[in-house]
Amino acid sequence: MSQKNLIIAFGGASPEHEVSVLTAMQVIAALDESDYTLTPLYITKSGNWLTGQKLLDLSNYKDLNELEASSTRCAFVKDEMGRTLLKEQEKQGLFTKPAAIPVYAVVTAFHGSDGENGSFQGTCEMFNIPYTGSGVLASSVGMNKVKAKQLCVANKIPVTDSLDFFEKNWEDDQATILKEAEMIGYPLIVKPCNLGSSIGVAKANSKDELIDAIETAFRYDAHLLVEEAIQPLMEINCSVLGSSTDCRASVCERPMGASEMLSFQDKYQSGGNAEKGMASADRIIPADISSELTEEIRELAVQTFKTFDASGVARLDFLVNADTKKVYFNEINTIPGSFSFYLWEKSELTFKALIEELVAVAIQNHQAKNGRVRSYQTNLLNEKAAKGIKGLKGLKK
Ligand SMILES: Nc1ncnc2c1ncn2[C@@H]1O[C@H](COP(=O)(O)OP(=O)(O)O)[C@@H](O)[C@H]1O
Ligand SMILES: [Mg+2]
Image (cartoon, rainbow, N blue to C red; front, side, top):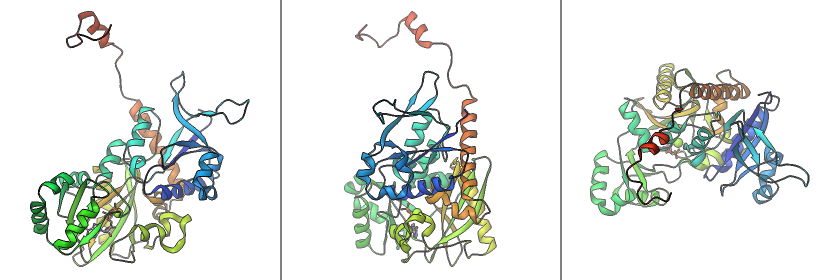
C-alpha cells in the first residue's frame, strides 16, 4: 500500500468524550510531520460516525452541532478485493463521488465505554484492520473492575479485599451484603463496576454512609464493588508499552488530588488547561518514592500488562499504603488519557515515537493473526445438504 492512511478514531458515547477529543488532537499534533496521511473518525455522543478536515482542529469543537452538520458521515466497507476502506456516505459536491480510502491502521483514541471496552476493537477485528492498543479480551476485562480483580487474584497480583453484588442481590438481601461488607471493615470504598473517571466512587465510614454510597452508585451501574479503603493512601501509576510478550515500563507518576480521593475534576478540570488533557492534572514525575518501591511497581506493572494480554500502551494504577508501602493493583487503563505520553517523554521517548511504536505493534499483531489458518476450504454445508439434517423440518425451501 503506497499511501499510509492512519485513521484517528475518537469521541463516542462516553462520559470521557471530551477527554478523548483532547487525546485525539494531541495525537494529530504529534504526527504533524509524519509519513502518514491522517483521517479523523469522530464518533458523536449519539453514535454517528463522521469524517472531514474540520475534525482535525480543536477550535471547531466549541459547537458540536455545527461541527456535526459540516462533517461527513462515514463507515467501514469492504471493497471487491477484500480490503477495508473508510468510505464517506455522502457526496461532498454535485459532481464528486463519495471518497473511500484504504485503511493502513486505526489509532484508537477513545476513553471509556464502547471505544475502550472491546466493542470498537471487535469492529476492527471484523473488518480485519490493524488497530492500536489492546485487543477485545484485555479491553473488556480491563473495563470491568470485578473481572479485572478476579483475573489478578488468579495470578497472584495483590488486590484489596472486596465484595461485589448486583442490584437484584441488594434488593433481595441488603442485610447479608451489609454484614459481609462490614466484615471487611470500615472505611470502605464503593464503586460502579463498569465506569471510570471516579464517577459514582465514594468512601463510607459507617453503615448509613455505606447504604447511601451503594444507592448512589446504583444510579450508574447495576453491578457494584465494595472494597477495603487503603489509608493512608498514596496512588502510583506506571505505563507499559509493547506487546504482551515484549513490553517495558515507563517511569512512575504520583497523581495528586485536592481531596483524598481523585475526582473527575482533579483529573481533567484542574488548572484550567484543557488542551493538555491528562497531562495537566497535578502529578509528580518521576514519583517521589524510593527506588526499591519504584522497581517493585514497574515490575508489577509489566506482570499485570502481560496477565491481561494487553497491547500497545496502557497505564496501570496502583494503590499504596503510605505507611507499610504495601502495593495493590487498582486498575488498568487500556487507552490511557493522552496515551500517557508525558510518562514516556520522561522515559526518553517522544510522543511521535510513541505513536509510531503503537502503530508498529498494531501491524505486528495484525500480521500474526493473519498468518494463522482462520477458515477451511471444505464446505460442511455441502456435505450436510447431501445427507439431510435433523431439525430443519418446516423450514421454507
Ligand atoms: N481501595 C481504595 N482505597 C482508597 N482509595 C481508593 C480505593 N479505590 C479507589 N480509591 C480512590 O478513588 C479513585 C477512583 O477509583 P478508581 O478505582 O481508580 O476508579 P475510576 O475507574 O473511576 O478511576 C482512585 O483514584 C482513588 O483516589
Ligand atoms: Mg482510576
